Image (cartoon, rainbow, N blue to C red; front, side, top):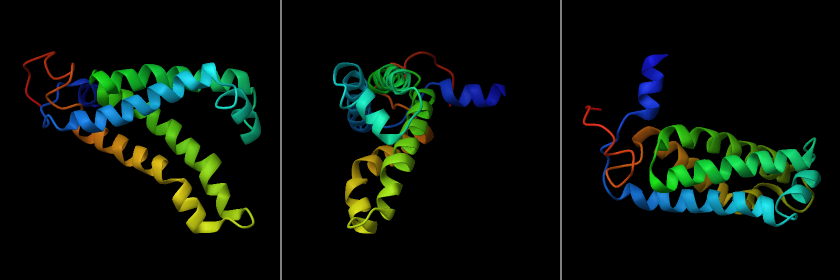
Length: 148
């Protein structure tokens, strides 16, 4: 258990260019989280349409994780750990909004692939961040002088 915790919170030394992935992922999730609070169409109404129980609570619960974890990814603090809840969120989004498009009349595979491109990019980017961490241009890089 200690080794898992160490993996998620250890300082990272990856290249500075990781900041570009963090910037994209962090800003997208951070802004989407804010929208779940400020725009009912992106929050409560959307969660109601998808069929989530307790859509008001669920939209704000997800929005809170998107804001907090998106910000942590953006600044590069505990990047690996912050990416895990975001992976769960994006996987749930794909399962509840993109996969069903395969079975809607007039949509199908190519419609779903086109519609899911941002979700797929976020999924791959989050997996990348879990594997490599926030890089040397992150708040998590300078916390300690321990070796990776």
